[in-house]
Image (cartoon, rainbow, N blue to C red):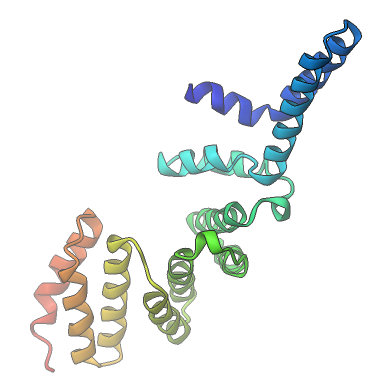
Length: 218
């Protein structure tokens, strides 16, 4: 079933043409009801092509860790501005993630800002996640002050995933210690640890930081 769905998404235009051809043939041979059903299916497929594109299989590729495949599929979306708002927001966010993976920080920032500007009531919980990603991009660009402010705004907006939230707290902890604000840094560390994250990288960061943070004054 998954393979069939993938085929339909990738070859939606040929499918649409095939449905129209079959509809015309049905009309010619006198089966008007079948013809209109085929025309209707072609219309629905056309709407899906413009409003959703290949985002379903892009998402699957990203979740499988196949960045190259995700890049191939996302490039098949020719008219991102025609995507429905929730899908458009996700499209720009994924574009940003893929740009970060290839160290294109300018493209990553541009796309995450487009995602933020795509306001949708169906993606109300996405603002915090988008702000978090923007903050991490800014830090990688060396914009520590802007990155810190953006991460604080991300927490205020709400980050639904506790693993991501723990990662933000650890980053803020590191920033505060660098600013010699040890008390604030320890508080962010406490909050990160309290979330009890399970991701190996985050757990390892907590273990390393825990050894060093207890030696700090404040």
